[in-house]
Every structure is written in structure tokens, then in C-alpha cells.
Length: 113
Image (cartoon, rainbow, N blue to C red; front, side):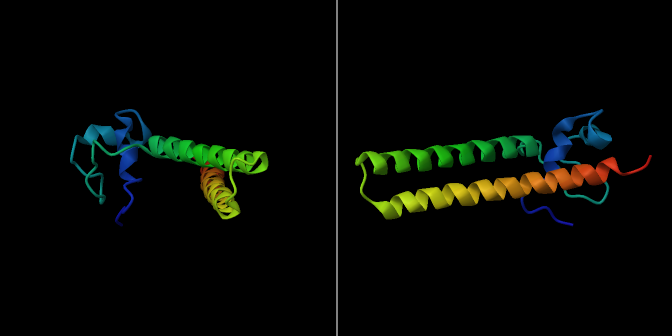
């Protein structure tokens, strides 16, 4: 199975004692049946935090655009609508990622050991 986004390989940076101890394989070594782990690849947490910051920035820009339109400092309604739609789509996407993560967590909680 390939990992085009590099998200699966990012878990290997957790080091020994982490999930599955993938860090014990060494740089460039592949877990059983997987692609080589890139030691410079960002972790899932880093990617998630960066996307949260981007969504926050888009929401701030949309709020600023609405306030500027109401105050008369801006007259392009299309630009304001575009900014609010971008922020809305980005937030909904982030919300779906969160929902999928919560579903996966709930599924992991039900595994019997």
C-alpha cells in the first residue's frame, strides 16, 4: 500500500517505545511491508497543527473582510463572499478530519486485548 501524502510514514518518528517502536528500525529502513520512513517528514501532529493555523487565519481574514465591508472600507461584496466561503470550506474539512479521527479512536477503544 502506498502513502502518497506521507502521513503513514510520519508515525515512524515517534522513536523507540512509541507506537510499534518504529523508530528502532533506523533511518531509511521500512517497517514490515511498508515504504521507507523519511526521517525529515513532518509528523501527523505537525501537519494537523499547521492546518488548524491555516483555518484560523482564513477565518480571521473572513471576519476582517466582513467588518471592512460593514465599515465602508471595502466595497467588493464578491471578495467578502469568497473569503467567507474559503473559511467555511476549510473549517468543514478540518471538522471532517476531526470526526474521522474520533471514529478511529472509538474503534481502537473497542479492541479487546
